[in-house]
Amino acid sequence: MRIAVLTFHWEDNCGAMLQAWALRTMLERMGHQVTFPVRRAMRRQRRWFPLAPFLACCGGVIRAVRKWAAMNVLSVGARDVGLRRLAAFKRRWLPEAACEPEAFAGRFDCVVVGSDQVWNPTIAEAGDLADFLGETWPRGMAAVGYAVSAGEGALDAAALGRIRAAMGRLTALSVRELGFMRQLGLGEEARLAPDPTLLLEAGEYGRIAASGWTSGRPYLFVYTLSVGAVWATARALAKRLGLACVIAPMYFQPRYRFARGVRWGISPDRLVTAVRGAEAVLTDSFHGTVLSVLFGKPFASVAGLAGGISETSRRGTLLRRLGLEGRLRLLATPEEELARLLREPLPDCGAGLAALRREGQAFLSEALAKVAAGRA
Image (tube, rainbow, N blue to C red; front, side):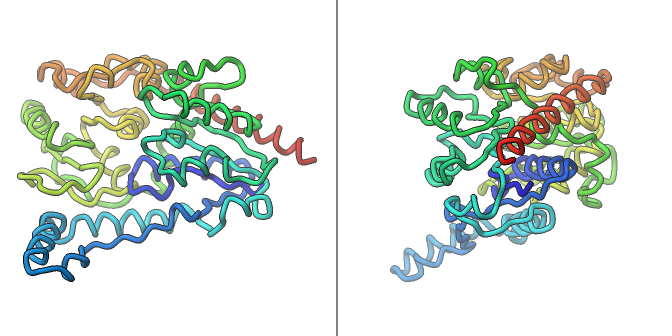
């Protein structure tokens, strides 16, 4: 079948791109043609230098130059280098085609929505959310929801209503975490499915791994949303473990008052390389956690707030199913305890990972078979 995958494949985020690539890889392995439609809401123009203030008075020009310096000077345009690397990965691994939702029926046999937080109203912008919920599709468009998520926050009545309406447009639905499943009060009409990055074995990530971009000696790899929160803890842990410290921010964030140990310009291929070569991993990222498990690296998956370690969250759901829930900790956990986790080898997760892969593959096979039967 010709399948359109609707997800955050365009987002400047390594995890979003990796899950899109993994889902594409699995669907193509099953014999389908996969395309990522480019819709109106995704056609955003980036401008790396704030030109508008130059039309204002001299004071505006000065403020504009200061803003540009904060965003670009730290590492010879680190933000721009990172964006180019992300764009290069997308061009190579995530094939796009311009197509508006109202034209899907003429181009595709089925839409697969997911994974990631495609139904999260606070992340998906207005236009994207309507596309992800199927509100803009042609009537009767065949569609499947794979490991969809609305995030870990409470949903209001309006959001729940839109999501329940979207469920009625799908031939089959699976969700990614227990918390979302419980919010919707789902029963047999939905299944729990793993994030697409878990559909592939570790060795398959060698196809996209970049060369280099690691340390010349054994290192602790730190992949984080908030460098400022984890920097001191990470460096202290690396020192305690006798390792170099390599820190990669998930996003470019200006005005860091330190650059020591920070590696700018992360991209999916470099993330895979960095985790695969690390002695241990400290992360507050879901996909950083996934890669640590896949590559069998001792890791600590940290959260700043108690809510972040809920067993029904996306990290909690995954680690509990693999018997690794003890590796999900608060950032405020004593340093010696985090160091112990980073020294302690992972138990063999092969059977658990294989079970997750079978669940995800079985759901996709069954769901797409229903779509094919409906088209016959």
